[in-house]
Length: 148
View (cartoon, rainbow, N blue to C red):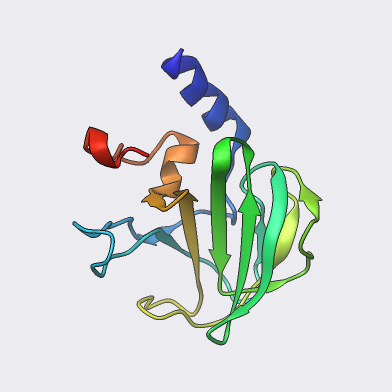
């Protein structure tokens, strides 16, 4: 059953920007409150079209600390985030895989490229490698008492 679920997730998601060039991998902190990199950075051209990785509903589209952020809610309580992005969608919009969410803004802290998309994945309070949605990321096992 778990294998079928993984295959369904992988078949339902795609890259948010093309061509994909991951320049900074997912690097979760040892503890939730410690610093770490809770997503992946993908190099792209400034103003590149950023697309929804999968079907869902736009939960947030606007600035956070001066940077544009778009969050999409997906089945199973998954949420993907995209930043820095100038949104072309509004909260409540229903999107499918590949629908435009906005355009990539230039500059991104920690990225040596002209522009990088920070792409994140979380479920509840837990962050995961978004490359898992594509069948590429490393699986993160959690202790049983922290699984929920």
